[in-house]
Figure 1 (cartoon, rainbow, N blue to C red):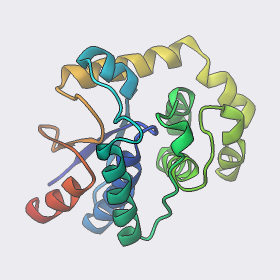
Figure 2: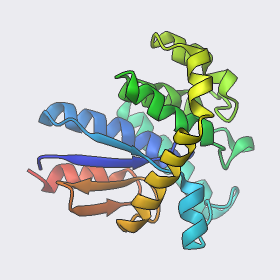
Figure 3: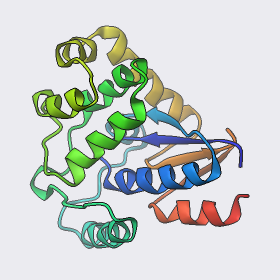
Length: 196
């Protein structure tokens, strides 16, 4: 395995846990992962899909499973049930801002932690201010950037591009630019085992 691309959305708790497993796996292997934002709402619109229904058996299992995996990884997991599904639109646009500043991985880590461990409502950009400033990023510049038409278009284009490549949900991974994997974070344990 020479490269791995991670299609993510902050609204997905599976992406949160996957991010941490991916980061550790890549550090150990000496691989720099490529992080590609997408908007799950846009993917769901074209695939006629929807988030896991809150309170369903599937939702309850997902939360239980992610709590188990989070414990194994040593990360916090405190899902904001009352806000699920999460509105991640502006936080996702912010990924491009952090990328332009050379801090995309740090930003992704902070926003995922804020949402899925620290009970922060990431739908309101004002709540992201302390996390941005902890990275040395200018908050007012961030606010301006995420409302630019070019930024909005880039997220739409990346979401469209992901769908054209076969992506139908997140987390999704491409190994060496070709082989696609999708699913719960356990898929990364599988990848780590079989891909040398």
